[in-house]
Image 1 (cartoon, rainbow, N blue to C red):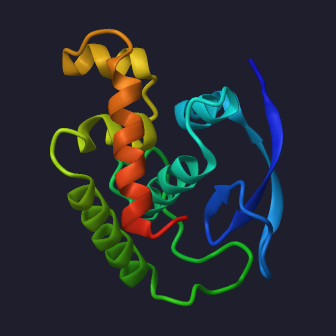
Image 2: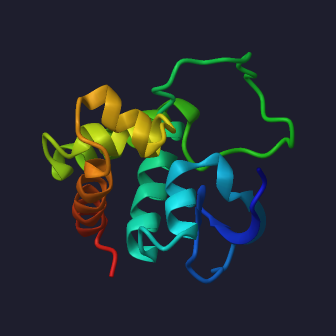
Length: 153
């Protein structure tokens, strides 16, 4: 199923915030991300969604997940990043670790499964041995703590 919507893309984060200088509009399929699916149905608010997208962006930048494709040493567009790719990866890993630590034990596991690993809530609940529909409550608490950590209003 495809649920295409226009979103703002700023500093590697797709969100609902207004486009800022240097940002651009992108089309996003909300059915691909469990967090976007929850946002589209009003089950998480804009603040929680933004916090989750920031965490996911740092997770992707840190290259924590296993690679599934070839790594290219030079950028195709000929541009350069502000940081050395290795330094950017280390900085993203530090931000990710600090965010997970701020969320706390017991909340970070469902947060990681849904936001970073892309598991749906029913799958995450089953993997964690939780009752049905308990995951959304815990996930919203985790996203609120994450938003506090990022200083989102």
